[in-house]
Length: 150
Image (cartoon, rainbow, N blue to C red; front, side, top):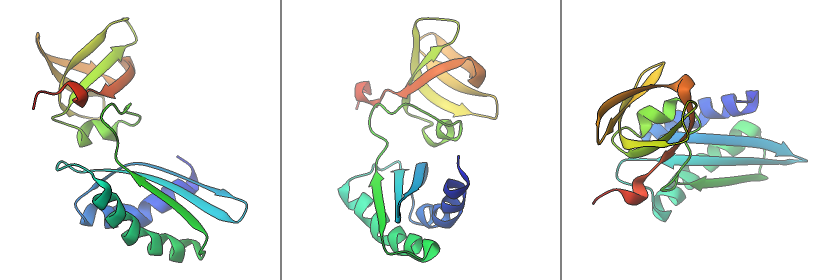
């Protein structure tokens, strides 16, 4: 994460948390005289267009003040149904959701419900039982809520 992304995270994450959302991912860059930020948010009840608009309206003025700029491009979105997990903190955010994990030592996906995580690994409830998977062994992990039984 770049320095500017770290600083922006410190500015907006408490606000997003206060509104009942998790900040899943943040990308920020400055191109010419324009500041660009892409914010991905999540909450258990779901993220719809109104939720994205609420976050946008709330954090845009804060970013403008922080950057001392009016030319800020801000995009707010949900993680999507089949999001690829990119950071270890996402395993805690998405606990209880269906997940697919591709291990470094295998060509097959391990599927199940993500039950939790700690500093080194995550726990997945598969059809065969509970399985603890070290983050170092994960080549790729994706949310699999598309197939979730509702």
